[in-house]
Image (cartoon, rainbow, N blue to C red):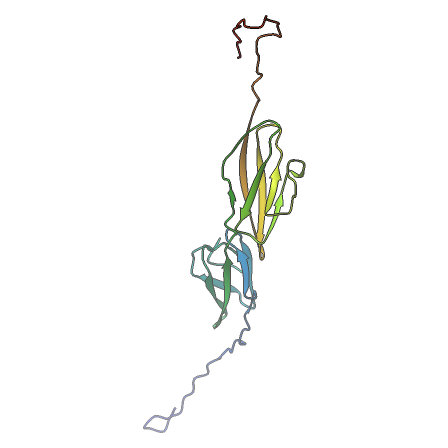
Length: 193
């Protein structure tokens, strides 16, 4: 810098150049509804996550995501004066919507009933002793006592469980008047209970 009188002066400034950061983030993935997943970011000293919905925290290198719907999460990373951003897509897969027909079961001890399940691709009846086929959508049930049967259905990568109450009634013990003999033409009163 030179003044109008010919005098010179100088100013020295130290300029620090921070290296550009490379942000590495978890891959896009799919999870079943109701499940959670850990998301990890590396390459920065500070990370902020958006949106906040479904996240355990909005800052840090690792957060847990449990979104209700398919969500794109964006992380902004900062190291010194440099910043970078990246995103990860979490796709929510629906759970199987299980149903069983007939819905309610009421039968007498020793009887059986056919049940048909729908809403999944594969099925597994938990109590194999009470069903005719433990992996079939349609099977016979042979309950001896009242119980709750458990059915698990799977579609793709997701599973759901259905609790099926079964009420078993004791058979009535019928009684009738004891054996007896009468003469031809006579009448007799018979009592059943």
